[in-house]
Image: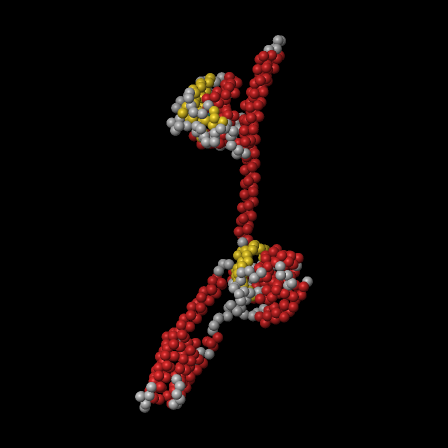
Length: 544
Ligand code: ADP
């Protein structure tokens, strides 16, 4: 408790005396008009100057003493400078010069041949001139200083930032008396002795505070704030106060920290505190502490962080939902194929003489579709994780033919005829085989479903080199076609017009095609139906 003893001694002989002298109702020093001490007796100095000038004149003109008495007129000018402005000082100096000349004329007119009095007169006039110039210069400098002081005071009072002007001399002396020279030791001591840190605050003498400071802590009066500084600190202010004490002990010039204060009405305020110390030797006489209320900013920031966390969670949930929906959508087709192959297989086995070869072919189909479903799931997971597709350079026509073979069964079920128009000699394209198959299968199944209610059902899949030099796959049908509303939302996830639809097919197609650096678009046909065009860049960089 050594530190607290130190504090008790210091508060005993220092702060309480001073606080007492200041008293709770002591007028604010900042409010007292500065530099007006001489204005209480306005006639004293002019009278003094006039009397002095008269005395010098009489002595100069009547005595025959051999010194330049008129030099003393300089004092008259200096006194004049305390109560009159620049013009007044020049007038007083001119008056003194006249008196000097008059004194010379009266005292030495009888012996014009004598040089010494003449020289003394010249010296007096020169001294008078120099004194006048210096007095006027000094007056101007004082005025500039007063104006800048005034400007500083008005900034101090009117700024929106709360400012405390404080004297830390006693606080610094108390810290110096502690036996801890090493910052780490002092840090440890302050951490273990919050009572000392708090007590240190009563050693701070508040010199002045501005209106913003009063508002910040809801103080009723300047006096309340100036005499009760420790009341605005809570246990949450301790880390900031500790940092401040460390700064004082280390003689650093600046300290800033975020903290919590409490108003005189008991409300908590989040604040940003910055303390600036003057250069030596007045380091602790006038410490400027500015405090900014950041309660609202912190509230907004917390709300933003919460909103961001919620958004991240939402987007994860949405992504998970999309992934689940995508898997369900994409696995549906191979599953349907597995079921119908299974049923066919059973029929072949149930025959009086089971046809093992056909049954085997069905089982092979089942195995193939099962593998495909597993691949599709794997690729979809890769897509959702944003990992790039597994590309190899392929002939697009081969991928189209493989995809078509996988929807063979659906073509038969929907009684749709297939027309393939595959351009020969197309450049190879770097694509993920399974993903591109998924695109073609989705477009083909949509096309078949769009033709469910029409008589003429033909699915046309074409490949060609587009005019822009891209490899194009077009999937066309002669089904119900696309309305304006549909055109606008086709590729949006979960958009569907089908009772059993999931609205994921086209969204998956777009994700896959864009991951390949390509594009997909839908068009209305001139005749019935719609065409979906996939455009891919041949030889994408990074191709294997
Ligand atoms: P789903 O097929 O589950 O509805 P998609 O994303 O594949 O999901 O398709 C979204 C919607 O786009 C469909 O519900 C349908 O209205 C429209 N659509 C897709 N392809 C065609 C097509 N070939 N002809 C007409 N409309 C289509």
